[in-house]
Image (cartoon, rainbow, N blue to C red; front, side):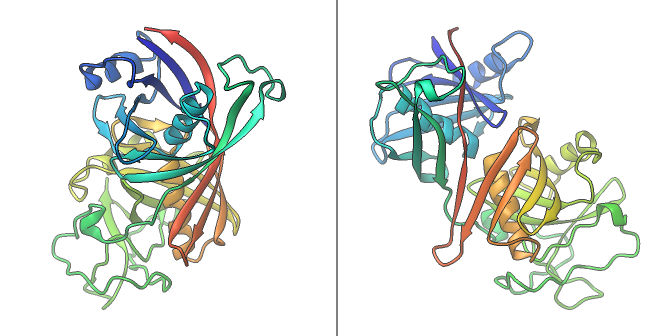
Length: 329
């Protein structure tokens, strides 16, 4: 099986042209190739398939073998793969995913203008970055999905501006999260609080729950660098409030145009980056009044530019796509 190892700001996958290669058990293969000691090493496996609805289809699997719906960093690399390998000459392409069809704008350079480039090229040109229309953010709890806290009843959804967090005297201030969306609940002490409340190891967290084709819970913290994500992340991922588990973003706001983020991805653990998570983070920052409509999200692997066009209700993500090496497994 021929493969290409690629990454989007450190979020790395093994890519296979499944139009030509036959893959009988992709879940099992994903586990084998993702192993960083005994395999190729990656956050998962992405198969590029033919599509009747779009130019191509992205079929992705996490490193634990579970099937993923969408990956923002992964889909940019799909765009790079199909262009660099000559499967298309178009610079605006559509990719079918389990979260719908996404449109990519591909940015190309001459190979000689890309320092150290050793991969394949399309007539001497390669994709170095892409902008992806990630679609509209989803806030309805049932569609994320996320369950309402037991004992609470839903208040009116749709107010995306007013911030009215639940006040809790036992809340650790260093881990406090101000949120106004995701789960809308009514607290016994406040008539219309709009906050998602989780009790994780006796600490209350408030998170903005958003779907960008897959479920996310955005949690604001004072310091991402020292936050114990390896302890808290798994507790969010498997919490009973998330029926399909959840990706959790821990976010530090630097200023109105810049935030830092670490992510715990369901099925993969902490990763260097998460494109859908960066989009969910940006939207959460905007509806909570923390940033402007366009923001740089700094992840462990690098930066992504996220813009939410509220009039169109589409989130646009721009970032790099990089080939690491080609191989045969």
